[in-house]
Image (tube, rainbow, N blue to C red):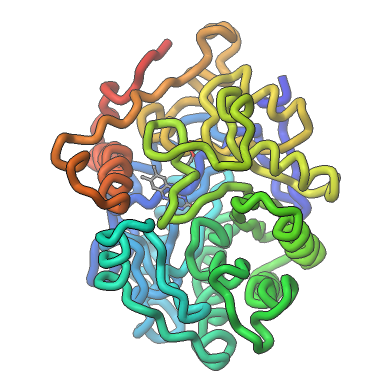
Length: 415
Ligand SMILES: Cc1cc2nc3c(=O)[nH]c(=O)nc-3n(C[C@H](O)[C@H](O)[C@H](O)COP(=O)(O)O)c2cc1C
């Protein structure tokens, strides 16, 4: 079975199998210090012993001045360049716990900020959706070049966060370049209207990402894994496909160890298809959506161009057969699993890779479709519905942090 085969990434990191726990914000590290803590360690202990091939942490903010959620792990922007001894210690404990059973763990780094260009967020066409976008986020001020690549700017912040991960003993980092966050905004022509060295062509829109990759490599080691999560092409025009392929080429040439394909944005959460939160992307054939992974077709297109690239696809995988088929199709090398990992932290060991006890037809995890509460249904804001759906999965991670078994009520069938 391909799923249980080891794979070696270009940096030399060996993953014992192909199942990856996808990045999910844990919301377990409140301010003011946003350090990982005992709850983070307790939660990750469950994933650590689950037989995963790779664990990706939830997004770690490269600056606490731009949090995605109040409980994000974050690098303190006002701290001196060196984190305190206490911070270093808890990061080491976190890394050691994640990897105590031999699963390499990668820290996902991101910055929540919508300032590539002064483009308002778009939560929908409704008047209330527009009003919410204006009231909550306003029209952003475009970042200056100094804020991007000057001392202490975005590139430096990624490097500092990567160094902290490296020194703690994590095996690598993944840049969050998907879901509409800062790096994704730079990559996309819809949100990057710049005409300077960071915008104007696909290559210039990718420039910030390339600088981060080179600088992180320089500041860590050639054995340190650097991956990136990128969006599939949501707008199905061949022009945008050419742009994305051109950007992937640059990222690949820069020495990336894997690319994770996802899609959607927090304005339009297509990555959350499959539990009733969102419809499949328009460019995904119905058959693919049904077959399970919604971003696999795009990954297959990428594969044709880049046969050597290590590709991970995340979104919608629920069965051993579907996962194995995806690997066999050649569309991807790694399978990312998000929501099922919150209700079945030991999914690989107990079910997917447990071929001696669980036959193929029962090797699956089905999630109960999200049922919006009455009040949320009545609320005419997409943003509210999305947030509520996400909270049910986030709640499972909270339970893990408290040392509780995840609630089985979100599983439709189990073995
Ligand atoms: C509670 C929750 C938190 C998430 N946080 C992140 C995150 O921090 N970074 C990220 O790249 N994706 C995040 N995601 C998206 C997942 O990584 C994944 O792409 C998505 O859940 C689709 O995969 P699935 O169908 O296997 O759940 C999150 C998803 C959930 C449910």
